Image 1: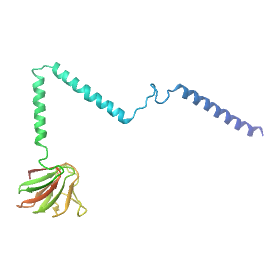
Image 2 (image 1 turned 180 degrees about the horizontal axis):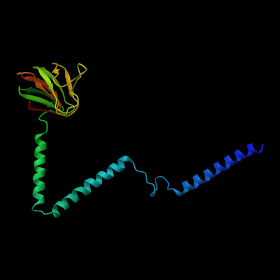
Image 3 (image 1 turned 180 degrees about the vertical axis):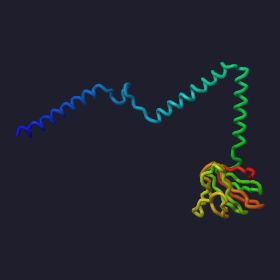
Length: 191
C-alpha cells in the first residue's frame, strides 16, 4: 500500500518543480514588444530596408565614384551605363501593351511574344518556333492544347505565351501572316 502512495507524491513534486522553474525562466526573459524583444511586421521591415537602400546606397555610390580617379572612372562608368541603356532599349518589345494590334509578319520574319501576350492567327499558315531555352510552347486556349516546336498554328484560335523566353510563330513557307496581338511582341528575322 505504501508503494502506491509514493509514486503520486513523486509525480506532484516533479510537476511543482517544473512549474517553478518555468516561471523563473519566464520572469528572466523580456516581455514581447519591449525594447529587449521588439515585434516587427514584415511591412515595417520591408519599408525600413527600402528607405535605407534608397537613401544611403545612392549617396555612397556617388561619393565613391567622385572620390575615385575622376578623369578615368567617371567617363568609364558613364560610357558603360550608356551602352547598357542603349542595349536594353534595343531589346525592348516593338509593340503591344494592353491594346489590340493587327500585325503583318512577312516571310523571313517571326513574331516573338512576351509573357502574357495573347494572339490570334487570322491569315496565313504559321508554325511554332521555340528557342533552345524555351520550356514548353504556346497554350492554345481555344483548343485546350499545348503547341510545341514545329506545331501548326490553328487559325482563329486564341494562343497565350506564358513566358518571355523566345517563343515565336513564323510563316510556314513563303506566306504573309496576319495576326491580332494583345500584349508585347517583337518582329525578328527568322533563322
